[in-house]
Length: 347
Ligand SMILES: NC(=O)c1ccc[n+]([C@@H]2O[C@H](COP(=O)([O-])OP(=O)(O)OC[C@H]3O[C@@H](n4cnc5c(N)ncnc54)[C@H](O)[C@@H]3O)[C@@H](O)[C@H]2O)c1
Ligand SMILES: [Zn+2]
Image (cartoon, rainbow, N blue to C red; front, side, top):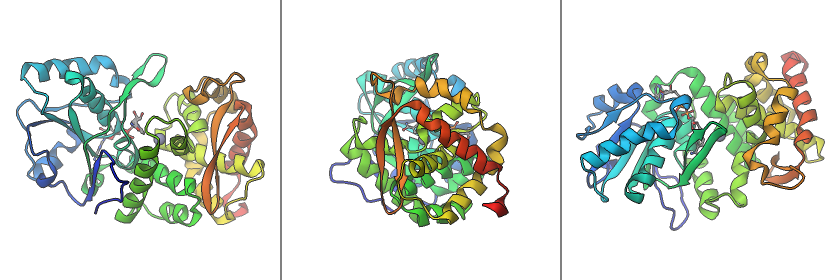
């Protein structure tokens, strides 16, 4: 299936059941892939051109130093400007390979074949590539959209359940930024999203990033759940996975929206969100641990008073962006904690 994309969108998008050789680049290419999916890649009969590498990467090796040997090896082959980098892996790998592609010969094409749900619905699309610096995550990077993104649902067969559940929160976030509480509830009732869910979510993201590639305005909507979420993720010392922190941050954003007088979502949605998030209660960092991270969030936009962009969802309409002091999140964090402590039958 082909998600709907706006006219002139730079990425050719595909959602397929299994990897298909017909979707590989027509010209010279080289692969950078996660060893976790190599067997599946081979079982589908897909090639590995000379010089391809299968490399395990994680958040701690999402660094510039990881890229240098890749660039050296490509130059030694040599790869030319007409070559394409095919990245097959989770968001860490697609962020690294996309940035390497943007640097090599001042920019060669790349294709994203994301293999985690989170990368399929978020990291692989939208042109952001980056590595971490000591001061924080994703602080050195480039906007370099992939020429093609191929979402193969069969990669999810081997994905650990926790990673699958983590990626689902980016879909729930997308549903709520559209104000579609029923879609969010339907997503929460499924272990694995349907093809139609992926196609719809990708279409929404494509539409938003095409109008605002560099996040000057509308793209901020995609940060729903991330304002508090990033702080929770960091304050938990990354014991919370990114998507898990986004899930907690999304429920907190719903609670903050209500506190600020926006219309509430139905109680059934709040119950479903709280139920799905309750297992994370034990790793929810206290507000005092989150606050410093919110204050230094790079999305604070440098506002003189330290205000941060907060995305507040509302039923039946697109979410709203509010500039608020970081401390506005304190009562929402308290509401979230209380909700996760409430027995399900009292919700
Ligand atoms: N560029 C963007 O717009 C953007 C957006 C969101 C997140 N990100 C980045 O994405 C990263 C997180 O990505 P992630 O959640 O995919 O994590 P990840 O890349 O660390 O992958 C999670 C784990 O799953 C394994 N794995 C990957 N595919 C598998 C499969 N099919 N079967 C079995 N195991 C598999 C990986 O080896 C890894 O251990 C973060 O670094 C984040 O900053 C980027
Ligand atoms: Zn995210």
